[in-house]
Image (cartoon, rainbow, N blue to C red; front, side):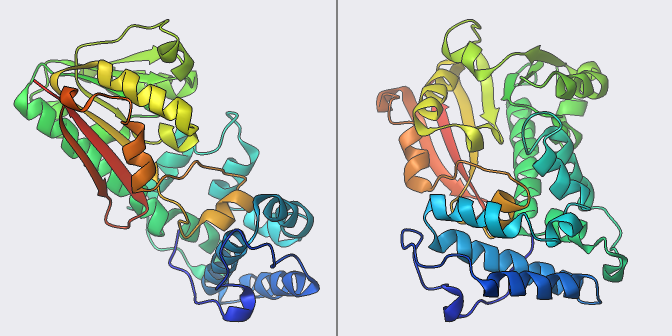
Length: 329
């Protein structure tokens, strides 16, 4: 989603999130009225930018219970909600047709926006352009390119490599991975609890060495599924939904799945991304955000002598942080 406009001090922009001094007021409703009027006019994209900016400030300055009250009592009852929910991306997250926000269909919307012709802002479709073509979606598209490059690297080194993608979604990184087309003689397992997503994977990639596994993370953690011997194990968006204890246990389990010299990669959105207020309110899309310290903590239970390398990096938009581990060969 897009870069946000500046917000003034009297919008509580200088206050930390643990200071509960920025609650709803008549001024909030008047602000929403004004922005909705602008969205119906010729400056809709700028109005979206201001809305997302102000929601980020509100989110950052309120305690969690006060923020949730603000969402339910001020934001969602306002007529601006109906306007924003005309955006299929926003509404899909909010309505959760598959039971959760951020499903594979939504991620495909983000990918498709990269090659979309510019929309006329006056058409009323600027909300979709805004929500799928800003800094956070750029981070998602960068993540896809990183995964494709990693696939190419692993397959270049071992054409018969075995790869496991957890919460694989539609596995669209396959479309960008050159070696996965030209040189691959191994196996890629697309692991997901969403059967509809795996149906798409089977249709699009089964001819390219991909097989699907319909299961949940719980099956891995309790030992119902025993997977080992992988040259690469990765999770693109899964850890955005896991608590720290579960995430740490899964990271350790993923590391145990690696062959000597194999690589593990985990991606996670960082705290206070520009879109956080909009996502948590009008999209009802809640993530577990992690900084560098929290990402490093995921590997705390793995003995250091078992690792050949541990690396923390960020994508170019600094919306996503990556943990990379290499098993000692």
